[in-house]
Amino acid sequence: MGAIEKTFPLNAAQERNLRNWAEEDIPSKTLAVVVPLVAAQSLTDVRTSIDYLIGRHEALRSRLGRTLHGMPVQEVMETAWVTSGLECDYHQVSSSQDPVEFASTLRAKYIDPIQYSSRCSFYLKGDEVVAVMLSVSHVFVDGISRRILTRELTDFLHGGRHSPESPPQASDYSDDAASPIVQKNTQYWKTILATVPRSCTYSGAVRDPYERVEMAKVTLTPDQASRIMAACSVLRVTPYALWVTSMSALVQRATRQYNQVFRSTYANRLTAKDYRAVAQLAQAAFVPLMGTEHESLMARARGVYSSTLRTYRHGLYDASHTVEWLNRPSAHMGATFQPAFEVNYLPASTSDRSLVEKSMIGGDYEIKTVGERMAIDAPSAKADLAILVSYEYSPWIRLDARRPVYSQRRTSELLRNLLSIMDVLCAAPETSISDLSVREFRSMSGQLFGHRSGVFIDTSTTTSLVMGFPAVQSCRLEMRADTLVAHVQASEPVEVSEMLAYYQARQPWFSGSVVPDAFCFCGTPIATGSSACHAPATL
Image (cartoon, rainbow, N blue to C red; front, side):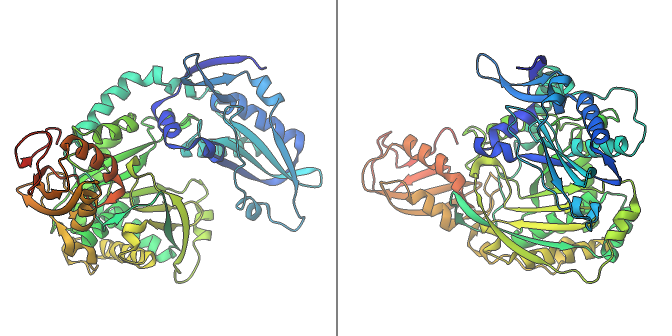
């Protein structure tokens, strides 16, 4: 058993990941640090660089432990113990293979974080190493950390100098170190999300535990990428803001909903020093966009940019607690919180811009669509529509759509809609979103508007939700001001509190539904009193 150098509590980002990940999936949550060598090196020289990197960062010497009370903690092991026991594997590469092209195909190995946080793979031609991959556990390392490790390892392997100053360590960002900031920022997010729309209705759907998710992907042409960068200069916003704006406009045109919340991932690195830290700091953020129906694309882009800047400095918070709070009966206004869409953005990480430009050479873009079966965790605040934008090596876009979305329009067509909106945003940013030539989803015709939750209510799924209670025989929905009244007839006297608990537990699985604010019982006595109408106090 190796000596433990230090032990400290997990931070909010780590705790959220462990709560959201299934235990059996945790070993697969890994990131790959891949470096192809310009010139082959001896195994001894490469291993020296790897050992130095491990000694430099606590996250690479960590494992997941538990206190006597069962609370997860991060244990940092002594460097000598980790490097002497580092799990390594060795692979021969064909002499004809280009190390750079070969390295781009490598994928991270599985890691059990209870045992260790990293392992190493060496790729050799004969006795010399031509590429190396360090697999690291996502429990301890985020995407920014992967880039830091890639940059440092490349530097070490190619003879570059590194800063003698020690980088910030994972323990500097533990819960003990960040707790006052986390508490303050968590309250900030609860305040700004308290009155936002609870969800965006694409269509009514009763969800299954596992559903098909469709993904459409396209590589941008150099001309498209150049136009986007030019638009950033004109509008004085980032490419990220333009992609969020395009998604926001797509959602508005398809669903009529211009007050939205989008989900993204904040790196939570606010200083230059933070960008040298190898740790798991990234958190989901839920950013409100309070737009108007006839707003221009330019105005929406600037609104996105200001909203992101305003909220980014509060990214170090307890996202799990915030979502749980939003979904409590006292706060959820009848609907479980779910963002309208999600945008994740990976900027180019290489300092050699010629590599990026070289990889962008191509002709007309081609959209490729695939599908995968994925678990649906209804209360987890994951969007049914998402894009991943990557500028690593070559700029490409992937749009993911779940059943409530692709049941209304093919995923490939949605991606074409998104790209056409981006084209208009770049060429004519003063265009009103309401004038964009994107068709509305056909599901909009069967909805009720004006509910206090901000949800556009699908009458079919809400009726199905209400009718699911065993005693209910019929249901008619009615909007009264900003509340939803359900006129129901039951086969026997019912306890309204039991009905309410039943509906609140199942509502997350009924897309486009809300729990009624009040029940009017038609010809049915209720066990809680003599009134024919009942408005639950918790709603």
